[in-house]
Image (cartoon, rainbow over all chains, first blue to last red; front, side, top):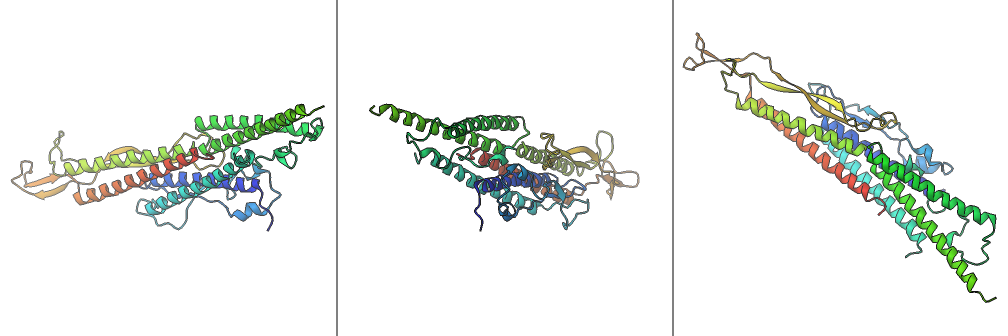
Length: 127
Length: 101
Length: 143
């Protein structure tokens, strides 16, 4: 397995943070419009298989990885049941998505913080 | 923007072996070392600039908190690295000056 | 910042759902008001909700980022369904045939509405807490 560079890990973590924020934003918007007539549930989709980024070790220019791979713009979610007023927001689904995104953010933040600490430790020779 | 420019953290512009070589023979006049030093200083300036931009984006509502935090951490790390390099250089210089002629 | 826009969206829902509850309470309280200031029975009120983008991130859309969408009560309307009629000749507002027109309010339905609004309120409150926690975590990044 090719060596995973710092750059790849860090940009993957950065992307995870951004993705989590986008998911929270759409989930919150859906929840806010739980009872708005005609409102359709949205979500953002990310092609975020970690291998996708880490697989190409030559791709160290992090600029290209700035945008979420799966476009990242909100799209209407398919397959949800609509109510009489045309609204298809499911409370539990959105709350779950929000919680999950918060957890994802937390995990990425922990990993990133650990990375920074390691780097500082190395720089300061353990002091 | 900033969050994806994390890139490589401490290894910008330094020859392999990093800051630990304090030997007098480290070729201080050598242009390669001089280059590395100025690259290091440039990186301090550029990460500081990025941090400022990221923080101001955060405060006017167009940027994320995490992007700003990461930019701040990056610039802090660059600064620490540079300070360490400076310390090593100073120590090397002092070693040199203490040498009996 | 996107996360604070998200909080703004959830906060807008708190306002809207609270208004929904207030209207339901008013409907219930007036379910038997057969004569109001205009001489007519109380007419059921309803809120009309509509989604409104939270504008705090004007450039986010251009970058393809998710924009927060909140909700507002665009108007409070009067339900135009017919009043009910009840045979009660002894009632002070009974008409010549002995019928009283009563408000077009169905109390159980109002209760159900209220419960729905309360549930939505709770969910949006939870959302605010979760997002706020995320912002906290972001502030601790790297420390």
